[in-house]
Length: 100
Image (cartoon, rainbow, N blue to C red; front, side, top):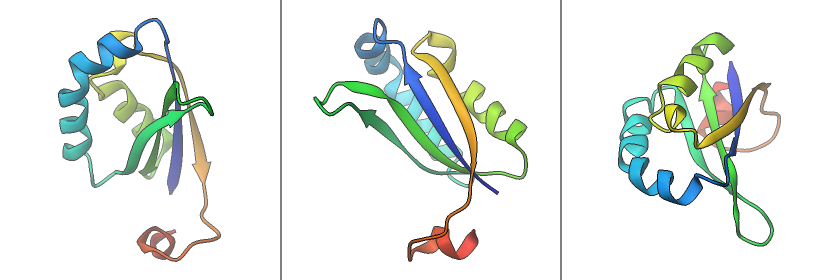
């Protein structure tokens, strides 16, 4: 099953914490590339940071929650909140569509 994970960041901690833990966060994503298919930041229309999004393949939402909590960003307070939503692809022509 595919899940979209939407993160809302804590604006008070974003720049400093992001710089300090980015290398560890990217290494974490690389180690979990079998489950975390895509990841990246979200921006407001004016370009300011709004959080992030992952697309995760997992059998249960609890597995996705474990990934969220294992991310080096999690214990820093950078993430204000997150939502895990089941997602089913119905349009698109790439490798993800073939697995959905």
